[in-house]
Image 1 (tube, rainbow, N blue to C red):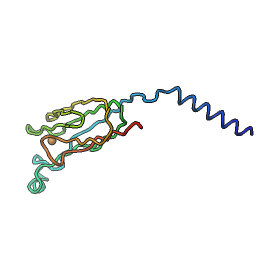
Image 2 (cartoon, helix red, strand yellow; image 1 turned 30 degrees about the vertical axis):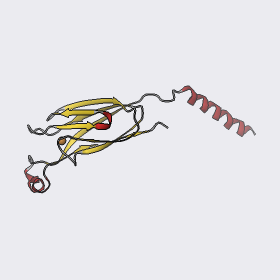
Image 3 (cartoon, rainbow, N blue to C red; image 1 turned 90 degrees about the vertical axis):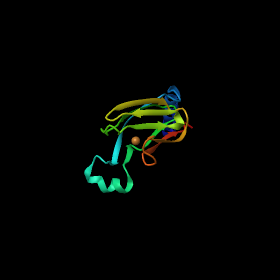
Image 4 (spheres, protein in one colour; image 1 turned 90 degrees about the horizontal axis):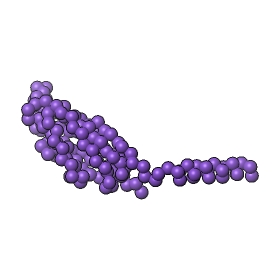
Length: 139
Ligand SMILES: [Cu+2]
């Protein structure tokens, strides 16, 4: 009986702590992203790959997962330095279309207010330079 009342007191105490915390505290989630040149004409060792597939770029990480309501900050580096090596980070579902000039670092920030899976891509290198923003619903 004494053990039960101790457990009950613990539950009441824990419930009190949960009740004191705000239900949906805004969290800032920051990600460092980079462009990746899987096959570039600037790399002589990849000449045969480029001849067969063309230049192939990507984003890393290719999947960003956040919770609905989070403040999302993306720092994106374009690691390609050629004059024609511009990229974009385009997330149509969130109205984002950020230019990424060669050898630049750009920051994109937004509030992930819509839950779902939102594809992103580069306007210049389709279909391979792409990924997904996953916004988990809060309930
Ligand atoms: Cu690109």
